[in-house]
Image (cartoon, rainbow, N blue to C red):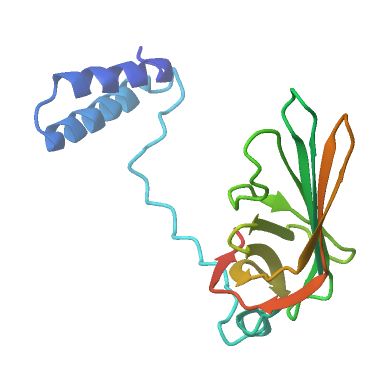
Length: 226
């Protein structure tokens, strides 16, 4: 008696011996048919893989392009408040410099009610080039932010370029989606430098005045939730 356990081996053997694709398919079906006949009352019947295909699932509803979510995102404007930059480079004779730079600001936008606190540090001990724009830093989103909210930024000190990426979940009734927004702006810093030194080390400090800025996204990507 043939059993279900033999079925894959039979199909595999038929496939290996077959020629054209349509012949492979036919031989596999014939083996299954023979299996069903031989099983009879002595064993369970083999499930017929030729059954009717499953119905196509109904597409999930998506956020309307004319709805509140899309309109608020497309009209989004970011506000950067109290962006502050400072750095310190300590040099000791015979040693590599110990150098740090710090950046902080608060980010808000017109599409959400929460804010994000953004802080980052850049460290180097050889070529003094703080915040080269390559590293991405995550911000801390404020209270009330829905699950999945995220804010990240990159800063290029030499070019004065600040890039923002924010992930914004949004719902309309039972329909939910997520938006990925990206924007870039130029930041002009007004800074002063102070140098203090003695026989053991030299410390060069740079402090910049707080600055505010605003920007709009150059890209918006809407994703429907699975």
